[in-house]
Length: 265
Figure 1 (cartoon, helix red, strand yellow):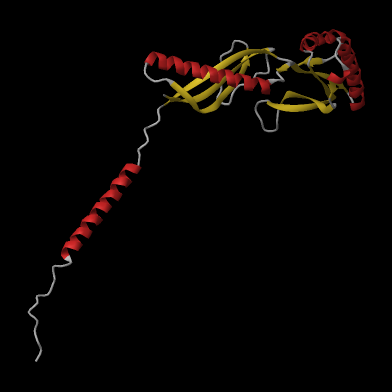
Figure 2 (cartoon, rainbow, N blue to C red; figure 1 turned 180 degrees about the vertical axis):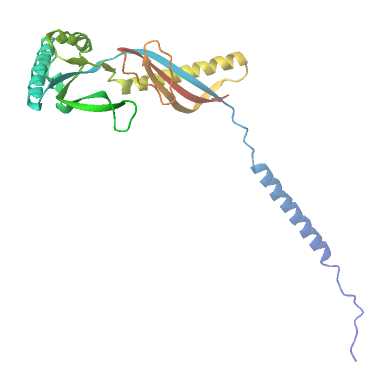
């Protein structure tokens, strides 16, 4: 016969240990969550101010381009060309007498076209009750043209020649003088200088705004981008989305714009 023990089974011996372990685990878990919470820091929002700066400077063109066109007419191509050559030679002599260097004078190729005159005549067409205007083309010969192109850094001398060359008209030379075009050849290096001046103006404006508003102080430059560069005739305030590049004036104003963003302290 089996013997049944009177000793009660020890079910409760492990319960205190389990409770302690659970408590430790909960504390450790809470510690991890707490540590994680404190390690995530929310960065404060960065405060900035965006300001536009500008700079303006008067410049004088140091390069001029100018052209004059000669024209001759004759009943045939050969005669027209001979007449044109004589006129071109006289124009070249005039320019050289003005002190313009041969290397600065560039005669272009001659061009020819038929000289056709269109007239209107009144004709009575068959079956018509009233006369009708009819165009009639009459061939008169040939027109030949040649352009003399001048490019020089002697702006004053070329300006004078462009005004006075039409005096050849009194000698029977058919010549048309175009308006000179003016350029500034050191524009690339000037743009760098102007952008720096516009950036300095932007900082001064930002300082002035904050000084009057009170509180914050201007910090480091966060961003800067170049705006439109306008080259206008002197004293002109004209603007363009693409930027102006005047060629009509000896004296010009270059206007540069910069958009900047500064951090506030």
